[in-house]
Amino acid sequence: MARTLILGAGFAGIQTAIELDPLLPRDSAHEVLLVSDQNHFLFTPLMPQVVSSYINPRHFIQPIRDIRGRRRFRFRRDTVLSLDLPVRRALCLEGLLDFDYLVLALGSRTDYFNVPGAREHTWDFKTLEDAVVLRERLLDLAEHADHTSDAELRRRLLTFVVVGGGYTGVELITEMQDFLFHYVVPRFRGIAAADIRLLVLEATDQVLRGVHPHLARYSRRRLDAEGIEVRTSSAAVRCFPGGVELAGGAIIHAETVVWAAGVRAHPLVESLPGAHDRRGRACVNEHLQLPGYPQVFVVGDSAAALHAEQAPQIAPVAIDHGSLVARNIVALERGAPLDSFRYSPKGMLVSLGMNYAVVSIGRIRFSGYFAWLFWNAVHLWKLVGFKKQLQVALDWMLGSVFPRDASILRRPVRCRICAGGQAESSPPAPARSASASP
Ligand SMILES: Cc1cc2nc3c(=O)[nH]c(=O)nc-3n(C[C@H](O)[C@H](O)[C@H](O)COP(=O)(O)OP(=O)(O)OC[C@H]3O[C@@H](n4cnc5c(N)ncnc54)[C@H](O)[C@@H]3O)c2cc1C
Image 1 (tube, protein in one colour):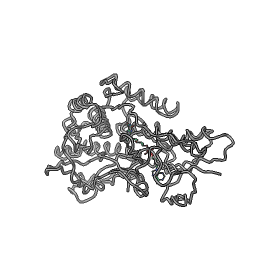
Image 2: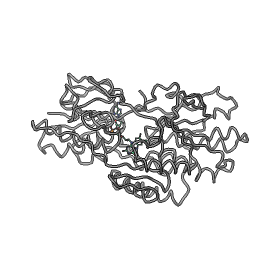
Image 3: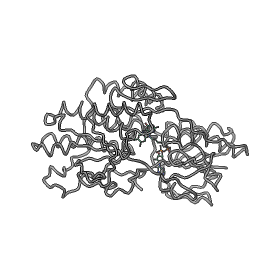
Image 4: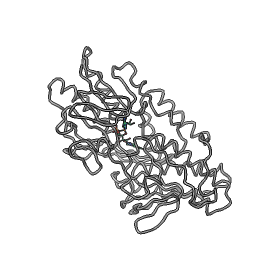
């Protein structure tokens, strides 16, 4: 019996499993085994809205057992530790798995670009756990700031820096702005709007690079109007407890610095034989095969299809990769010619917080409220399953009418500065998930 082993149940891995299943003949003994360390599929575009308490984190993750339904593919929750490609074997935490075809869909991890202190003193924004922890961090600091009589301290507690002005950083900071100004300020009597400071640090000369310049300018104006400080050409060169240093020596004091500056390939992908691009992604041929290993495919954020125009690390590319590889595995089995990957940009949608977004699809570009409605509609439509769509739609509706949920589920932690010492005790350690840590 042949076995296709798919490692990683994100956009690319799930797509491969779902598409491969029906392509195989009914009576085929071919087994499709999907292995991932999380037993749910995470729809990452909605993660910033967890931080602003706009949606409940459980409402947009999809248990893989539900996606599988009556499909034939099997799922195993396990963590892959290493690969032995010549003998076609993967070593997982819970045992060895042999394969005939391998699909590597392990996603990416945070890239700290070797900035000193970045890994230790910034907050990650890569996994659902990161988003949940960051939400509680915001509320926790607001609770501390609310009862301090020291204005300087209050401002420092309420200064939030996001490093990275790409779409993740921009969507995150606008959600934070929305939550802090429209929920926290009216409800925390000890906090005024002027106490809150939000900054985006971008190393290049513009935010949202890759978005059409007209829309990037619109976004910049929106960020300015929302009181978010955007510092372009401002690379973070050092991070420390309580702040960040910029190139040129300027220091920003902030109790929370979130790192959303870039990603690189999963360590297992970086250790694959053959060439890699500067982000550690495995260079694959036009069929997404690893050179020298025709039965090994690399997809999604892990793959650099160098023959084609460089595709960005986004969900639609991962989904296209998954579909292509499903077809190519069947073609390999039949001895038929393989399909090639061609990158065709599908457009760019960036939310700028409540009521604003920018949309670019082909030659059509628009911004503002209708773009925001469009952003909502597209993301609702893309969610897997009617139940999840309903839950998220209800969250959005209720969130527009009723107050957001500001409960903190974790036990209180001692605030590093409120406790009296300026830097003696460490802040609560940012959550590091398996996929985010090297
Ligand atoms: C906060 C955030 C917001 C984003 N917003 C957007 C957006 O709006 N639009 C967009 O197009 N893209 C967005 N992206 C990018 C998009 O999520 C990625 O491009 C996409 O997820 C890549 O798909 P993938 O299948 O390659 O990897 P992933 O979806 O990351 O899946 C990788 C899978 O591998 C699993 N895994 C990792 N290590 C192991 C291991 N050792 N063993 C077993 N399993 C493992 C992981 O748990 C995960 O299930 C966003 C990303 C983030 C982090």
